[in-house]
Length: 252
Image (cartoon, rainbow, N blue to C red):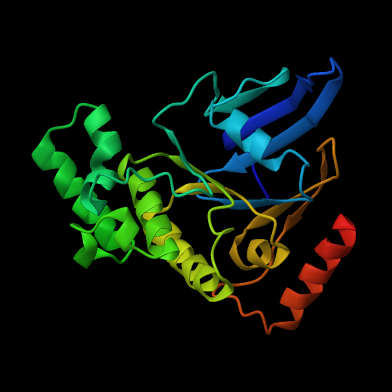
C-alpha cells in the first residue's frame, strides 16, 4: 500500500469540468484522491470516457484542474516539469530526426552539449534494446520499435515519475505482450515511479503493484487493489485469472 506521508504524487479532490458548445457543464473526473509512492508501478483502468487520460494530463501539468490539487513531492504541479515525463499512445516522434536525435531532443531543449546528449541517448537506446538503430528514422521502424524510442526519449530526460497513457494500445497483441515484459525490465533497471493508464485489465494485472479502478462517466475512483502476485507473472496462474475476472466484473 502507498504511504501517503511519503507520496511522490499526491492527488486530492481532483475535478475537471468542461463547458460544451451548447453551454452545458460536463464533468470528466470528479473528486479523485490518489497517492503514488516512489518506485511504485500503478495502473489506472476504467471504461472509455471515464477521464483516465484527462486525470493523467492534469498530473503531468498539461491541463488545469477545475478544482483539487496535484503535488509532486509536496510541491504543487501547475505546469510540465522535468521531474515528470510522459509517454503517449501516439508515438509523437519527429519524422525528420534519426532515432538517436529523437531520443536526444529533450536534452537539446535543456541546453546539454551535443556530445553529452548523444552519449545519454545511446545509453537509453541500449536500455530499450535498440543499440543498432541509432541512425534509423521513425518510418523505418515497426510500431513497437517506435514506442520503444518514445520510452527511451522520456527516460533520457531522467524523470522521477513516468506517466504512460495507453502506450501499447495501438499495437498488435503479440507486440504488446513483448513490450509489457520489456517495460517491466526497464522499470526494474531504472527504478522509476510509473503511473500507467490502460483499457486492458489483463495488462494492468500483469504490470501493476496496485490497480486503480475508475467508474463510468464522470470518472471517480471506485476501488484500489493491491496485486499480491510475485513477478514474473504468468497469465496461467489461477490468481491472475481470478483477479482479472474480479476487476472486469467491477467494471461492468
